[in-house]
Length: 117
Image 1 (cartoon, one colour):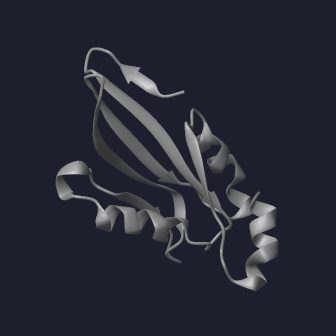
Image 2 (cartoon, helix red, strand yellow):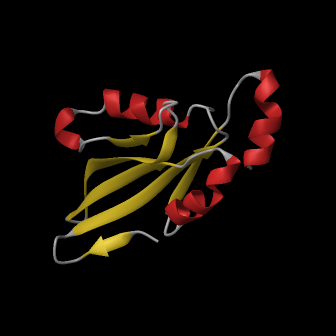
Image 3 (cartoon, helix red, strand yellow):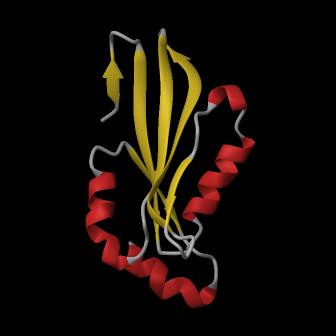
């Protein structure tokens, strides 16, 4: 459920990009970041390993205007797709308002996509 801050008149929604490792989650988020007006977005924070994989999450707060006088803000995250980061995924998914499943379109990645589901 979205977090509503009545004092700040702000609605905060958490959206998580989920899918197999190296399936395009960070690429999707980077595209949204690049195409969003600078005044409507915060900084993108990326925690990566030496192999350039996202270790924990990317965080991108987007400001999308108002609803009944409340400012709406979407916080976009990605989770690590590698199986051994299961605990991190569960932590990031806590309190989520929406999930975007990102599937790798390569035929040889079908099993990884299904496993990620």
